[in-house]
Image (tube, rainbow, N blue to C red; front, side, top):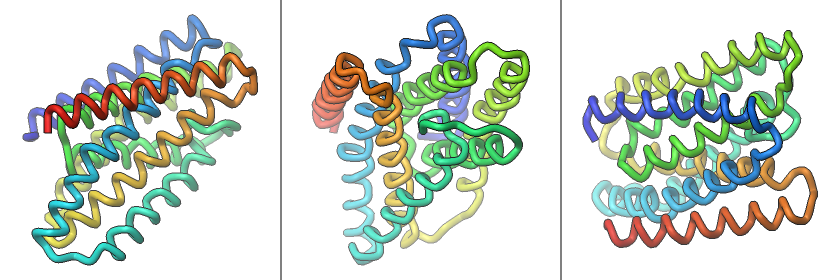
Length: 232
């Protein structure tokens, strides 16, 4: 995917974030379905899109699988640390500048995927998740005046950060042997993002919501895997 398509992906992610935020403001109790859908879509991309990319790069570059697995695990753990402070797809969202900064780094990591292994399925998964994050953000913030001001700041950060991530990673000029490591790190980040999306979808503890989130995640995952396998 070229530069134009990368920027198109960034624009779609920003638009989806704002659309999700508007829907979350109107229907704050309905966040389980879009979050569960984003979980399934992200997992499908990790398994059926990024996984084969990593395997192909390993064969071409000779980078060892232990190093690839370690970097993927580090991406997973690092994303979890960031999300605990500043991600609307993680329960217990805090406030203040620290949260905005963590949210920005988290979204920049998602945007960096566009520079590493951009593809139509990846863009689609990120767009679905961006909508769910915007939805969850406004649903969690509530309607208080100071919360609305915070929502404007965080939505601005959430929309701009993916472009920063894509530019930063795209300008590194890394050698070929770094490609499987970087792709594995992105896969770890997206896998952790999918886990958080599912957790908040089911966090209310209501059996119907939890079952619905599980069914939606499994259905989207199965459908996306089938589509990606067919396209591959």
